[in-house]
Image 1 (cartoon, rainbow over the protein chains, first blue to last red):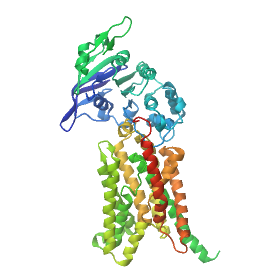
Image 2: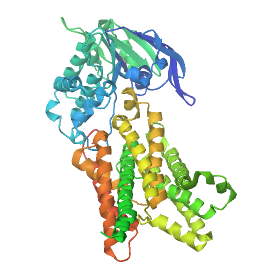
Image 3: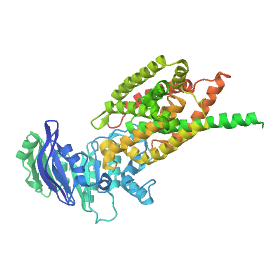
Image 4: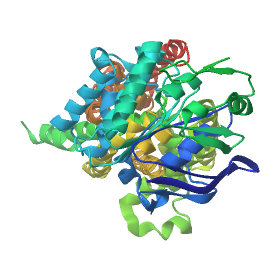
Length: 257
Length: 302
């Protein structure tokens, strides 16, 4: 459903992405990993349609990505970015409601409000609804943003395919909420939503991903769905650290450093 | 009621009050829009060159109006002044915006500095025009720089009224996308907002509101800064309410300020720009102080 055909991206002479061809299967949880500056966020931004590739093309639902209008795309995919910096007092409610902006004209319908309430409850931030967003802790803010992104792609009918892009969604969360957020994303996969996430924790990735893509210097160097076969050679090549991999019975492999 | 009182009421007081309403609403709505556009609470039309540019445009017409270039546009009649102000204001605003916008975000310190530079150029130009002007012209230019409602007539009410209503309706349309823009450029894009187009439209509408008001009453600073701010403190920053609230509160503030101007040194009259500066500038400093403290507080980058 989402395909990239030899996409590159450069700023000036510097290539941030070089000739990546990749496709993403519907309803799967795809995780992108790699060291800092490997081009993960750039790839995500291209796939989400924020930036256009310098060369190559991206195909979504059999149609080129830049043939979609911003409005059309807004009802098909949600994106959780790494950083948000808001300078004005604004309530958590108002932030989450923005996720429904693509769906209403001037005033939100009862359906929109119900969805916002549902996603806030899912992320355990409903009690913060009236709070000023700027007074939240980093983790709370991240959960609120996740609620907003979830309301954007929340659809009652499961026939419609949606995409969810997550750029380091758990960077500010404690262990409980790391899992809670990823479980929420995973549950969406079962409803025809395709998740593409950037994560830094290898073990967390192995626990939730259906497929892991490893990036290095602007290229996807490995992509595998057989997570049990990830070797320490791959880890070394991607992250330049030595590790060993344990295979506990009845459990996904565990990488220790 | 005798005819003098009637004339006083209908020809002087009433248009003056209406002018206050429209100018106050224009400046406040434009302040609210600009703050949301620049994602910064300390922006107002006076800081980013719009007002000074408009005054420069108006001054050009006042002093060089007999020049053949302006004569060839004389068919525009009374609209020529607002149009000159609009061109001046737009040029100044775009210059400041061009300098301060770099790769996806507006650099605020550069914006303030560019604003100072553009304001200085516009003020210098206006000063030069005042210097070479004949006496009555120089007086009108001084009046522009201080701001005054006393020239109100039904005609000026009509012109400012139309621009205010058009600008306000458009501002309401921009409210939702401007809210989304608070998350960031890319994030607003993900929510379906065409950010580049939005920015251009907002700057155009803003310039319309400010320059038409400025061409009629001169530079009135700080109203556009403080009115939206009071509302943000009271009711949060949802632009859907902020625009309506700014229009109402701006109108009220302007009527009250105008009343102060007429009373403090009666029977003479204080230019309104002086009063707004004396009240507005300290409030601005207080806001800066708050802003500074907020920057140090929690959140993502604590």
